Image (cartoon, rainbow, N blue to C red; front, side, top):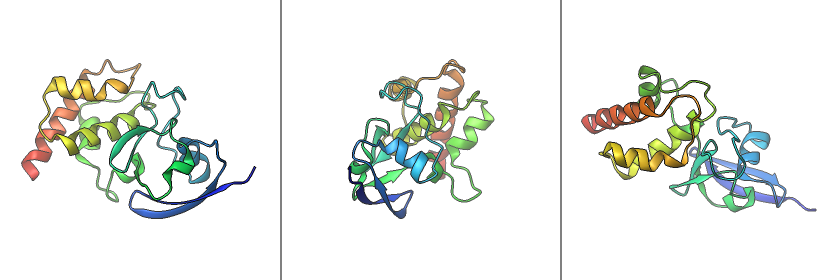
Length: 159
């Protein structure tokens, strides 16, 4: 089986890699590129732990083939902070204690950022609906939603 050469952009940086035709983007990110923030929770697209954006669209990287990333713009949790400066969502998750075991946190943060890029002033219902594809077995979601709403308010004030 021959490997596929892929040229893409991840977190603003040009990246090239070789992958097997059946290899998922999640496996490429974690095993070939060392970007281990995205987690495999289910492998079937049901939990959201592996969420990334691809060409501005929120996707489960366990359902995307690594070869499909050819020419794409991909954003992962590793690209969320700017150097040592955390994104407002990351800061608010810490302030609101909106994480526990951490398996779901990267995917939820990527999904929440995607929401706020589309809708900077979501209602709580809209935030809950948008994040419904991200499962958390630890927190009960209330702290997560409060952190997202607080970050949204802060980001609106800053712009």
